[in-house]
Length: 187
Length: 257
Image (cartoon, each protein chain N blue to C red):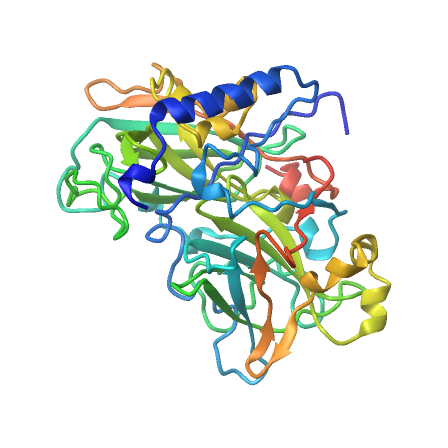
């Protein structure tokens, strides 16, 4: 950090009226649903009463299946073949979001792979960051720096759960089982 | 919510003033909005109550998605030419630079905006404010920053509009901005306001940034050099993202630009 660091512009809530601006055709389909290696990453966004949040927007950023960071454009106009690693999904009336994607590979051999997620919502004054780790490979997760730093009782909020359609990851903004949200240095 | 359950503007003003007075006694400078800001009623059940977990960015978090000119049309930066006719209201341009926390321009990165029309009405099914929809204005724009980190939009100055946070609640006129940096952790969505808006003091979303200097960073400047003869007014608004963690590539630093 230098003495010349600029001070960041504040965030503000995404508000209730983003639906005609930010979502777009194919936004949540990083790979076409139904492709052999496609997996569904989905879940509900819930408030402090456990009620669904129907006006949230989730963004996904992830490595490809081999753990490589994607440097290809094309998320806004998907060609059906290029994996860009990025997508967004608005929640529906039941607070449910859903992505069609692939399981990310580890960044380095033995590391615990995760999906990086950003959460926006009406009523949320600033965006939140979190991670959804892949289930399985307990050894990799137990060696993970972030998971080790989180108190044991809350670690499960950062791990996706296998279900019939793929991976489920609920996001609880508040209350019992509140999701662990992240703050990064220099913020 | 029934109308009799809504707080009055005086109630909200009192809550905002109480938080501001308590903040003045504090020593730490807050540069971002409070997640827990009760005057903004929708936040009551939607803010985390645990402290955010400190985390060093790793892997993909040290990078940001890449967008290209083939997927953002040049005309998307002009919100006044998206329909057959001229939209109603004050034509304006807004431009500025997107910088990272080290002062480096964020090059060729996506900027998205959305806003109400001149009458304070959004084209959104949940906006039932009885002001006119303008058939010639959608209020959505996109562009990529240039090699200097600059963005540029032509639009219509949005109007203030009412909302149901409390009785007689009005949002100051604003344009929503969505920004990406060179790293995932720099992602931000925010709102740009116009100088001297009389609604600033009464708006719990603007006031959720409790430091007055930090709030000021959300307000554009009127710039007469950007206004154009018999055509439009001009505003300038620079945006600073948080600091980076990764050593930038030559292309990002622009050594070959």
